[in-house]
Image 1 (tube, one colour):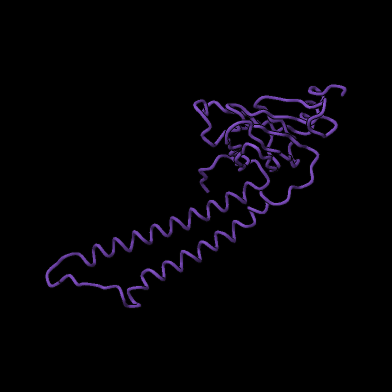
Image 2 (cartoon, rainbow, N blue to C red; image 1 turned 90 degrees about the vertical axis):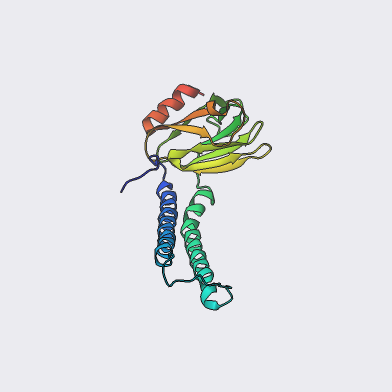
Length: 223
């Protein structure tokens, strides 16, 4: 099937895409039905000989049904979308799975400051490493991201992961992902954050197990 979305490389990407497609097909069906009814009315009730305009006060149940029935259908479809999206929401926004890979991502005008806690697994200690716009993670491994903002509202957006979360000044927001395809992917800011917003670009580097071990060795050496 055709797909207009960016490639998805996370474990919960397909769940999110399924919700998007459900909304798309329901919206498309509703649009075609509504336009079909309008087109039918334009043709069937067009002006002609022997057809006189009639005043309709809209007080009868038959006339009100044109509003009540579509309204009930839309409500049911909305509940269906909410139900289908509940699983994806819980998967992404629910409890973080256990992981020993943690990073702190702090947005500022106009870059992503990414802090790695080092071998001791603790932030704000001597072995922390700070990198600009470069996020390195292992494949097939949950990653905890602790998101902050140094100045204004930013939005941490990795389209291929189907991850998007606002970064707010004065708050730390935890999120997670697990990448299942190795490669390099773009990190964007999806919130207008100033005149050079368009330059705020980082990269997610998803490594195989051996590549990640080699990167850790190069970064921390014997520490």
